[in-house]
Image (cartoon, rainbow, N blue to C red; front, side, top):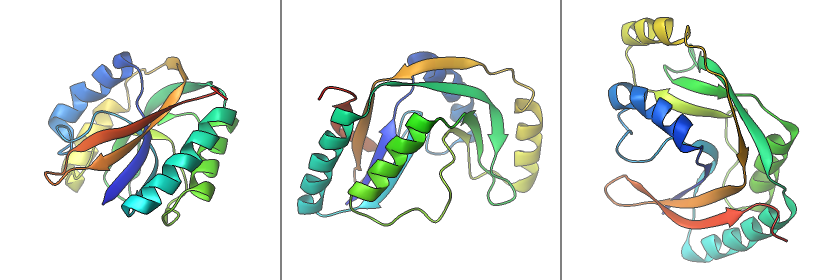
Length: 169
């Protein structure tokens, strides 16, 4: 089964992201706006081990600030448009611990914290949409105090398996 470990941002940022995702992200109806920390496939036994590891990580990781700064793109690697999150030591540390202490392969890409607002766009569509969205003045800071383990349903949508609150050790 497919799993993901994510941070859901505040409603304010989710509403902003969804205002674009409705039009530019075919996964809009499958999962709310999020920051992916890890995605992987696992058995039920591996998920139990992962849940234990995530509980241990959450106990020692303190809540931290997350800053959303601008609209950016992964082009030319792929035509994804996203809200860029400034990497912080705390966010990087959380990502590293999760990747070191849970099952699954490490990502082939470097960790770039972001919230996707458009994907699977043609080259022309990407150019047009990104050209206008990169002018947006996005400036938002919030405190992250939890992350979530999700699983993917047969219809492709995602559901929360468990929530982990930071610093509750």
